[in-house]
Length: 378
Image 1 (tube, rainbow, N blue to C red):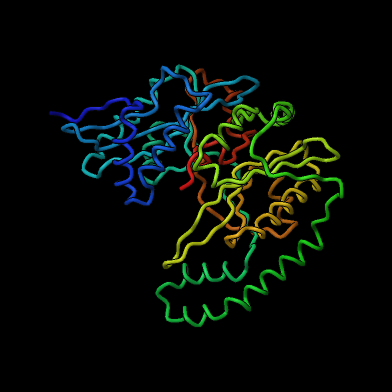
Image 2 (image 1 turned 30 degrees about the horizontal axis):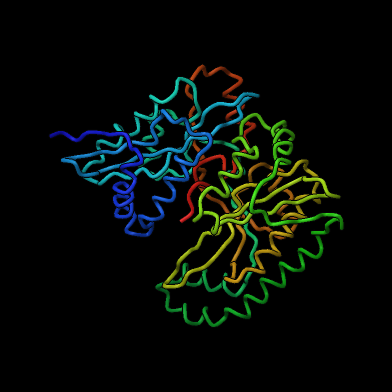
């Protein structure tokens, strides 16, 4: 029998979760995959019930590959359109020639939609390029801003990562506390000089978004041509729709004189290095109602305070700038910059007029929430 492809449905969640657990060398256990499937598909308020969630490659009734996607709604040039973020594309090596068969089914879902991926592997990116996906070209998508929180733990992590087989590692490891103290002193000085907040800001850690976020969304979307919808219903699903993810995220709202003006959200991923686990904050979304410098300074000062108060020591806060303004503001309060390869790729299926293409390539607010990276935290 030739390999064949079948649409996933809830009755196959357990089988696919076992396959993905194996393909990820049990880094992501089956229970996590089942939680994500329910979150992505069954509880997703934007998911069209008569559309497939993904496709399974079988051979002799055994799973050999899978490609899934997450449906969301995008705001595009004043209209809402369906968007699909590719995720969890795994195919056993001897069946890689069938990868395209899994991918082609995505193009059958809509006559007009936006296809996205922000975490392509090199092999997957080559396939996306064959289908003429484009990379967001804003230069700040090549950059990562970082703010050290616990200097000693950060030094420990860097020594383990950069000098794992180096005979100097034991000597460098002994410098953990003096180097950490210097790092934190430098950061505190920069904060003291540059980060001055107005006294009337109020902060609260959220467990639910209220109706005021519909008005925040209406105001914020006027600044961009392309972004994921951020109304109350969508935000509650994205941030609090999964019991497991709820424990791996922090969302902080900010008000000024009682008026809602901003929120910031972080994932709480962990990095492992030579037998030790390190916690860091990864900013996955930020909405600020206007671009006043004090707003950015205030909300990041609060995030820094929250990071320092965590039970498990946080080594740093990581931000991929979502627009040029964020980069400018954060560099003033102690964030340092490094570089990465751009990985936000997209394709619009439909009538590709010049206005849509210009919007997609230029005025695009691209946070992890606007791609697939925000939908999976291991």
